[in-house]
Amino acid sequence: MVAAPKQRQVMSRTGGDECQPPLQPKISRAFSKAAWTKSDGSVAKPRNASDKLAWMSRSRPPLFKWRHFEPAVITCAVGWYLRFSLSYRNVEELLTERGLGADHTTIWRWVQRYAPVLDQRCRRELKPTNGSWRVDETYVRVKGKWAYLYRAVDSTGATIDFQLCARRDAHAAKRFFQKALSTPGRPRPRVINVDGNPSYPRVVAELKRERALGRRCRCRTCPYLNNIIEQDHRAIKRRINASQGFRSFQGARRTIQGYEAVHMIRKGQVRWLPKRDVAGLVLFINEMLGYE
Image 1 (spheres, one colour):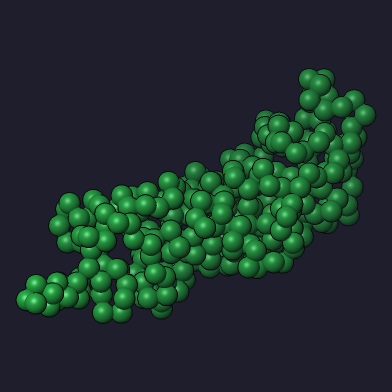
Image 2 (cartoon, one colour):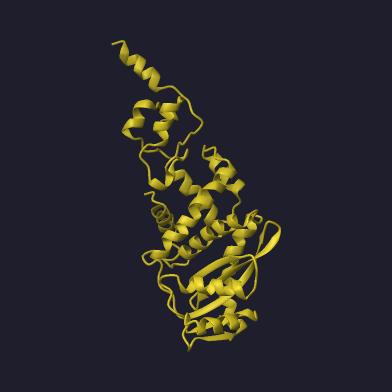
């Protein structure tokens, strides 16, 4: 009769620095013995080192092992940043309003870790594109200098591939074409529409000699046919401008991978996901990152 009240008193202790009212985490059996609950029902982190180790190694998706925050919080923050024109401090403020104290540098690390994974895993779920390519490059400021984002879409506006390069020359254009041609689900183009960049015809001729492109593939300069990719640049540039540029080339490359992945999902390029399905987009991002 005496031990029961003492047990209830221990379990009602408050502690820890993370409060997650809207998200109730799943606690493993090993962790439930060492943890205590807060007054609002959320789970607090243990105080000593052994309990903290059990808390960090509890049952969760492999991609989120040893993370201090729950997978639901991480996927929500990464999805907000990649979907909308927000800065890291904006996402930090949105999480603070919900009682989650995540610093903007922590959100940056999440994006650097999970944006390339999202781009890699969503590729296998994309629909195949057609053989009419529109190729163009746009400017991106990285560490105070201009870098060049090569992008290609087909005649329907579906993204074929993209690549961030430090220079705008024939070597960079050839690397981009080789990357786009090696992507699964991308058939050889029958026609490539380009702007007035003189390096594109030379690169296409070289790829024909190397038999990477078919002999009947045409490279034509037609500015008005590239209006579709010029308009498609806007969705990516809008998010880049909200981030106020990048401080490193590798950080820019990883972040743009996430921008492009979410943009492809929004355009309806996933086989089983309709266009403009917001709820399906969120579920698809969670599934690609291994959190369901």
